[in-house]
Amino acid sequence: MTLSITLDDLENFQRLDVYLAAKIPNLSRTFIKNIFEQELISLDNGQEASLPKLKLNKMPPAGANIVIQIPPPIPVNALPENLPLEILYEDEHLLFINKAAGMVTHPAPGNYNGTLVNAVLHHCPDLSRIGDKIRPGIVHRLDKGTSGVMVVAKNQKCHEGLIMLFSKHDIERKYEAILTSDKLPPLAKLESTIGRHTTNRKKMAINVRNGKKAITHFRLLEKFKHFSFAEFTLETGRTHQIRLHASALMQAPILGDSIYGNSNLHLKKSPASVQKLLHDYPYPLLHAKILGLVHPITKEKLFFEVKHPSIFENVLEAFRHE
Image (tube, rainbow, N blue to C red):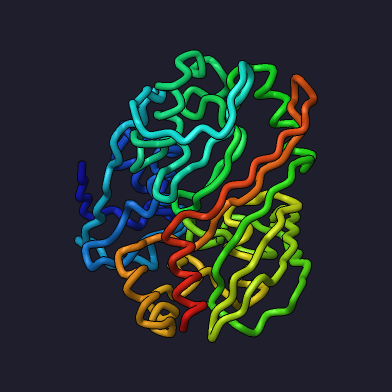
């Protein structure tokens, strides 16, 4: 649904979100703020108004139009769907899954179905009673484009135990990535704080106000012309941590990462064989290889290692035979 609002009576308002709340009384201030954060509001000239605190005196004069994309309502509950699910291990308390690249972890604006949660709910109907109704059983997530190992709780006690393990960082997590630089050290400890980007709500940023401590350990595995194959071990687990640390602290964005790097530019520097492989592949080459933890209920040590997907291996082989 799209709304078009013509600006008038601007002299009585200082902020665009306040103005819109007055003009559209059936939309709450919280809902309007979310619209800004999702970048669903623009001016008729295409200029984005990306912050709730944007002042109206910086906007076009009266008579200009504001265009608002109203997102569909968020479902009250995630719904089960019969989707492919690669289960690595399962007992009565939890399950480990190898998530495919391209699958969203849980329902969110723009992705209310086809997610990992929808698939797990079909496999475990009782999961709907665990934790958040839109994210039942979920204690961590992988980005849509990231493949690899995840753990999901099947009951409340295990859910609480897993949350405690993740909050204390008592988890072993290793990732593999192909980076867009061949000038990297053998080992590195990457440290910063990470918080939401001040102007682009889809991104995270380092060393921002109220950011949380983030530590990543880097190990170089292979070096190619202009590119490298590397392993990352998470000491903390912030949103986009590896992608951001690779880009901001190592100046080596992950190949295919259009959020934290120039994916098209980097792809053009790769061999023709790699360009052909990744021509229609829209995701960063990042894979969650290892997840290890102590079972919250049985206290058994669990460790799962999953080989990166075929597209990842094919790109590596193309670099090796350059």
